[in-house]
Image (cartoon, rainbow, N blue to C red):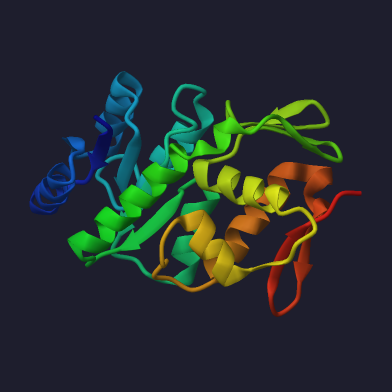
Length: 226
């Protein structure tokens, strides 16, 4: 049974979220502040973390940063929950390593869909493929490891899926809508700015190999070998 750690200080909301996830066959663990959330994440190593942005003590963005810098927790997918819906807040969430973002108030169905989509990405069958190389880039899909010039680079679950999707479709232009559907895993209720933000993150992490990802203006992106 997959486990979702809910880090949320609003007790009623946490209970509602837990109830709906448990109805879908997921195990939930709930904590109400950032520091306790970090401790619990390190202890149980959940399959996914639902993280409120505005937490007492330790802010949600700081929690996410710490999780992503720790080797044991860096690959746990994180969905941020927040009442803030401005574009800048979404960008900040993605910049600290969040895999997805849901704005309060949200419907339980929407949240369940997003949780399931992220868990599917984590459990995808990309591990059946062998190691892939494009220029200085090496991807081991079985272990979810990316190396650039022989140096390992840490990617979130969503960033890895986005990169691997582009590599698998080498030379083929992918529209933002197609990437939203295939990477995020369902009819994503958001604008295509999400794709642009993640592409920027992936390029930055790839460093000198970031120019392997080409922008096709007005349409989308493609990966090209040198």
